[in-house]
Image (cartoon, rainbow, N blue to C red; front, top):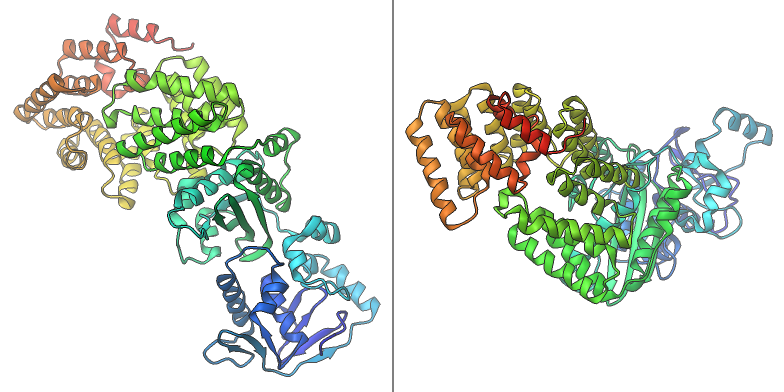
Amino acid sequence: MKDPDHSSAIAFGRFQANLQTGELLRDGRPCKLPRQSFAILAALLERPGELVTREELRHRLWPEGRLVEFDHSINTAVNRLRHALGDSADGSRVIETLPGRGYRLMVPVRLVPPEPAETVVAAASTKPNRARLLGAALLAGTGITVALLVLDAGGLRHRLFGSATVPQITSICVLPLRNLAAEPGQEYFVEGMHEALLNELSRIGELKLISRTSAMHYRNTDKPLHQIARELGVDGLIEGSVARAGDQVRISVQLIHGPSDTQLWANSYHRQLRDILGLQREVADAIARQIEVAVSGQERSRLIAARAVAPDVYEDYLKGRFALNVSSRASLQEALVHFQGAIDRDPTFAPAYAGLAAAHGTLGRVVLGTPPGQTRPKAIAAARKALELDPNLADARVVLAHELAREWLWVEAEAEYLRALELNPNSAAAHIGYAHWLLCQGRTREALSWGERGRELDPLALVGATIGWHLFHSRQYDAAIRELQSVLAVEPENPGALWLLGFALNGTGQFDEAIQVLERARSLTDGSSGVLGVLVRAYAGAGRLDEAKQLVEELHRRRESGYVPPAAFLNAYLGLGDREQAFAWLERAAEERSSMTQFVRVHPYLDPLRDDPRFRDLLRRMNFPE
């Protein structure tokens, strides 16, 4: 039966397959089957009892020149077909596997004549979308195989079946791309492609996109796709791979409907490395079309705007991003070197300036013990340069907003956050940053709301630590403790979460418990000065004044040989109840624009100082908007 009538169904055992509609029935009831699995079934049904080689299936499903993980893809498709048919590789009754060669259908088949036209019309009127939802596996009488529909060449599937072919997708996660590079040591390149694709898709306001941090939790996972979709609360998943050989890059992607684990679309793109930015935008635009998201004209113009970049420039940029994501002092220094290398080669490449700004900003965090005056001006200058070259870089605007807020330039910082959110509605960093800004203004309820929005976009990124910090400042200490304990349940040795939990426990007067968690944070950070300042408060509150004073002496000794954040002394003297020393160190923190001064309007530890004219004068000098 090499040329079956495609208007007929083919019956075998308890099943019927319609090669025209791509529909599989079991005992007369619809049986879900991914499109590639149906294509394999169609090939076997056309030649029952004969060997269908793996190479034939490769050409049938993936045209010449398309680079896919063939063994993995075809094995997955065959396994899903076996599962649908109630078959197995070990005790196969329907499909025989000939190792290394191919497959053979082992059951007899027969043609089922088509129903009369009026019956078909009546059936269509009651189930108008089934054929559309499942899609056609073969086009009748043309010899065009399922590959045409899998690839959606020229939008053919959409023109044939209309918008009902694809289930509605309003939320999506781009899973980590697989590395098919022929050369070793290409992880930085593959992760860079993944991050770049996320950045492109995140610009689409109608699409909820899970952030990179949460997506990376599924690197090398063996979880079923429907389970991943359920855990993340998304409709769609993007799977894909990156292959690179020299200056040639190929990206293969497929769109999966998460709840049904059904492939909706797949394609492969091949470019030279210098055209990589255009390739990323092309892939993002194609995905947007396939899920039928309403992309505004402005968003589409941002998606398709691209420029060529020299391969060595992009190499340095991707290596910088790879190092930036590690966020250790050594990796941040490495990131600075790579970003500066990209800039030296191409001073007009805006993303490298944005990366440089992010590296300087991260290096300036208090936990890393770097004075803000050494890093913040560099971060601001690099971010402004990036935006001068490309005003649509949302990441650069987020970094700039962070640093402007620390400089008390509140109005300008808010404008940058809001513009970043307009450019990238899916930026968890922009949501969290704006939540911080609102917190600093005393708008705690709004801050908590924006923090929750950030958590929705990055549900596995331990955003609970940030929300716990916001709850602490809103005096909801018990809720803050619960949030931070939930973070530590997932990551027990997270020093930042332990440190913040110490703040909240001090707030409730649970000083002994605070000492325990802060001592753990102290050991994990090699005695961070910031941790010591809060630990002083815990020891003093527990009545262990001698130990508290010893820690203060240690902070002073450290200051003789290196940098100690003024906030460490401020927290310490507030804990000891020394009002004058607290004011002295608060002024020093203000002089250097210490990051903690952002929060003076709401920080609970500063409550004993609020009735002093000196404190009111500080608030005036900090330019808080009315």
